[in-house]
Length: 537
Ligand SMILES: [Zn+2]
Image (tube, rainbow, N blue to C red):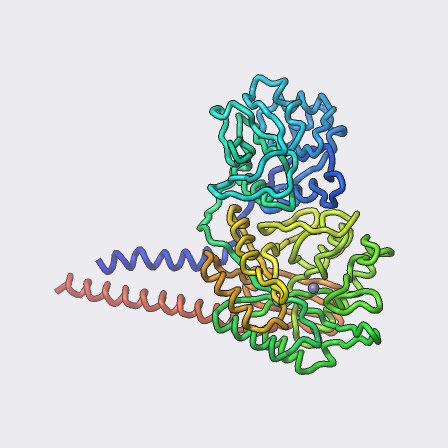
């Protein structure tokens, strides 16, 4: 019996240990054609097409965008999936409608203009109507209030022939809002700044037929925000130790230099030895450093931590001049301040999440990982919250979202708001939540937040558990398998850095597994010999 157990346990441990070291080989990514009539709702600043396009990075798929008037005959054939976004419903390209009607490929139509497709078709049973009178949305047995009245398309009759995923309710009766009929998927409105966006995100799993092992736990990270050379070191230490003692990893959004708004005098963190020591210590006990600009301001008179650095916040437009030059200069100054003090950022977060589309593209060459919201257009500052991680999109190598909000001194309802945000996020499979916290609030309010997380079904996300890189001129920072390394060609250094308690923990675990394996082998040999002896007696 014992031998049998050994035979099962030994190979399992060896296979598991090996498997954790082997990377999975991915098949070629599938291609999505995204056809749209307009990119913006009237008087709104979010680019809906960009917002939805980026989502496919969560599913390792490539997206090609096309204005509906530019669509040419048979183009559909080059793609695996077709997505149509109708903000106004102006689809005048009859070749597009003809091809959509004659394809067996899966189509997801979001928003208006669908009548052009289904009225001509014998394939679909849907009978669509429009109303402004809906008050809530139902999805996965949860109800969400709609707020301001706006136009929704819905399925008026023929419910039996479709599979419905979400309903809209006018207070008297509910109607399908999101459904599947044949190869067609449909949702009666597309939005990117309400729970409707999360419903779309989750529906993509069904549409793309992607299985996910969803344990119904929400992964969450905590980011200590706007930490700068004049932050109170005692408070920072208390917060860090409070989290460390509870085994909670955290991020630190670091501003390496502080500008006095009255004198414009710059205090770099190198001028503050106690601050350096504190950040180094936090880095050791579980803090991942996220570079949060150089000074988190741009113009004279703006306070660090309050101003915009990569966006013209005064005229609400992208910064004038060469964004690459400005961005590289600021980030290089920030990174040099860090590395000379043995502080190693592994991701970036733009101040106020504000940056132009060109800015994202420049950042992609410097940082593997971006944290925050996404500003999807350049015409005005507004950002979109995402419910999960994105990879290899047009804007990002890797994007980690923040979507649960933050705590302020003035807002007594923060617990309700964050609870509500977790509830909305919980409809999305594979979700990752992020919250941020200012250190000047002390530990008391943080305790409340942690209590909330303890009551919700959450597990903590640790940035250091994943690989990241930072590359700028001679500076090279990497974290791989939990180990940090830093090299600089100019300074002629290559070294492994930060023997953090975290990597120490992993090493201990690996040694324990190895020791157990050896022990089991020895026990096995011992029993084998014993039984051989018995046999020859
Ligand atoms: Zn900030």
